[in-house]
Length: 370
Image 1 (cartoon, one colour):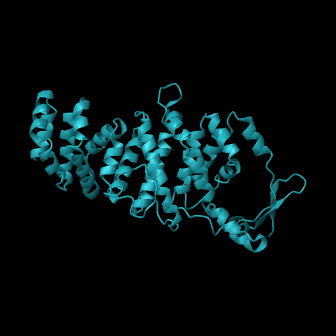
Image 2 (cartoon, rainbow, N blue to C red; image 1 turned 180 degrees about the vertical axis):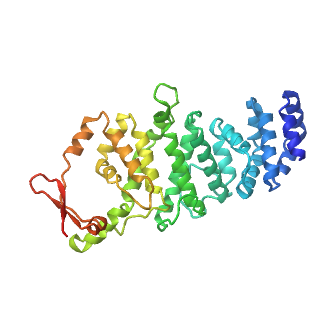
Image 3 (cartoon, rainbow, N blue to C red; image 1 turned 60 degrees about the vertical axis):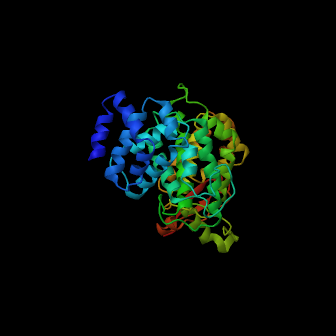
């Protein structure tokens, strides 16, 4: 109750905010941040936000050596008890998305051995549960404010560095049984860094090319985003419906996908395709790069239903639409594709049909076998 009164006082003007800051920063703020109570944390975030709002100098102090521990403890408390109001989101948005302190706070939330987010060496204990929660809440904030926030390039590059670090988890995971959050720090860091990249790449899609949105996406592209994402997609096992068809035809053609990697959570493939789809929107260099890396057929294969990846079909169609728009070379590649054969999917066979290929036209057709 005392903090709530103080929060109301903090809204009364600059003189009150200055006095509160002088009395409570940093020791008392830190002590309050360590109280694991939603009823305490919500008004504390309100007080800190009100004091710092409009003052880059105070935000700098809050995220400097003398204050970063306060924000670390606020994130840890929020991870443990949740939040009832959006003050923590407003605070983190101002610090991490509108300010330059994302990397510093992420590092401080990690283990002592994982401070350098640019180090791409993989270890199983690379990320903490606090870092996974932090990325989750940053992903939520960005998704909610996508039309308002212009993402800084340094933020985008830092998230990309985290993502590159976390992809090592794909070498030692089994197929995910749930969507995000999974409860496994490494997988959640992988997933939420990917969804952040998805939304960073969607800004010009939502807000158009007329606004000055900085060059965050261009920087990501210049650092090999498309090459990495295509490699990850190519290494994944096929979508569920294709896996069933391949399993049915294994005895005929010897196909073996044993070296493929499973999706670590439900929706991973969809999120990869979404990143590519957003990147290709009215970007001819990206369209051309995907063709040059033999990615067109790979992306066409993502346009089907997949029980492990909700809305994969919709994202796949969006991706292919952007891939072909205004690009005659890419359209030519698609028109020159020929169907070499078919494997009847169980869903089709269950309806009493089989797929046959017309040897003259190369087109498939359904044949009633009942």
